[in-house]
Amino acid sequence: MKSFGLVIGMLLVGALALVAFSRSPAVHEAALEPISLATGGPVTAVQAAEPTPPADAAPVADDASSAAPPADDDAQAAQCEAELRLLGAAFEMLEPISDENGCGARRPLKVSSVGIDLRPAVTTRCEVARALAIWTSDVMIPSAKLHLKATPVAIATGDSYQCRTRRGEGEFKVSEHAMANAIDISGIVFSDGEAVPVMARPDSGDSARAFQAAIRGGACAYFTTVLGPGANAAHADHLHLDLIRRNNGYRICE
Image 1 (cartoon, rainbow, N blue to C red):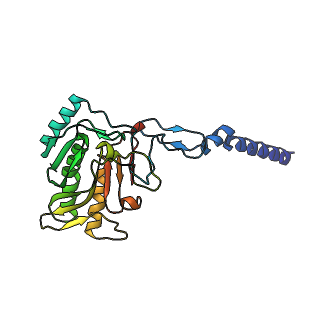
Image 2 (image 1 turned 180 degrees about the vertical axis):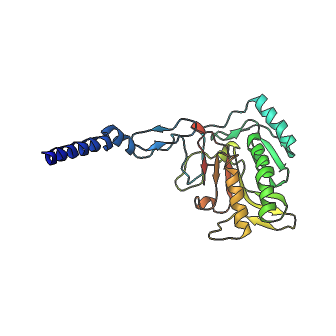
Image 3 (image 1 turned 60 degrees about the vertical axis):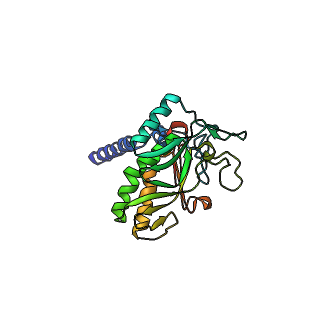
């Protein structure tokens, strides 16, 4: 009898342990749900489904594009221009640009320096020039001294304002360049006359690769779109930087 009672007791203990350590269906289903880390919002669980990009996020394969030129409030623009002067930039005001194709800018600037020369000068909005000036002083110049032990004297520029569509196969949307809201950088020029071009540098451990990676990554803190070599063929020889406005502060950094 004692043996029989001992067996019954062991069976009861095993059953209780099985119940205690089994996951409920609710817990099991929650564990399968992916976690959304959407910028600007709390961490939430969402139903498992195919990932959906933000409604207005542009494909990485080309320049991001907004639907209309950014509005320039006069007071905000004047403040931006004052800050730009304090940053050591040299620029002149241009007449408003308007084009029947939807291109244009209400308060464009011709910027010839952001603390160091822009070669050639660019036509852009103040906010883009200001972001470029801060990136130059906070990221590009220190990175050049760290990785190249050299002093940059100029930024070799590509497209700035240009009324055109995005670059990429089958693209028909207006580019941020058409809003004076983007700038391309093809290289950095140094005091000895040498230049470090923006280019693909795969599997390279040299200082030029480290420098390019540093300035490209650092640009992501100041611009909402950063594209360069490896993003697509259209950006194989330059960095594209723009300030497109997207929902929830969404950024593209490739």
